[in-house]
Amino acid sequence: MQEHQFLNSAELWKPGRRTKMIALVIGGLFALLSIARPDGYGWMGAVLMSGAALVVPVLQFRRLWSVARFWVVTALLIVIQIPLVIAVGPLVERLRAAFLLAFGVADGLFVILMIVLFCSGLNAKHN
Image (cartoon, rainbow, N blue to C red; front, side, top):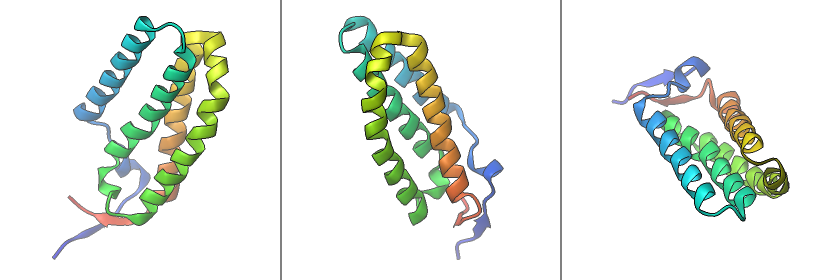
């Protein structure tokens, strides 16, 4: 028999070494892409940061992978990212790395907040 645990927001987000390594790899990939190709910096950077803002939390919230609501929230967040990247691309081209970093941090925090708000308190499998 499988046990179920009532998860609160404090138990959902506990980044471990793997999550930090993934974030480091994504940041390194961004650095390599932006150095190698200065044109298109805004679009590549915005897409990469948006992807990181989605991938890292999805990987971290593995306890919720069996919950349908988590995937619905994730799908809606993916849909929101498309117009967001289109809107932010020209700003990143103009304002460069500082704005891109701020966008990545803000977008990542928004994704984490939405997952916690809509998925905390759900019954999920306890590992």
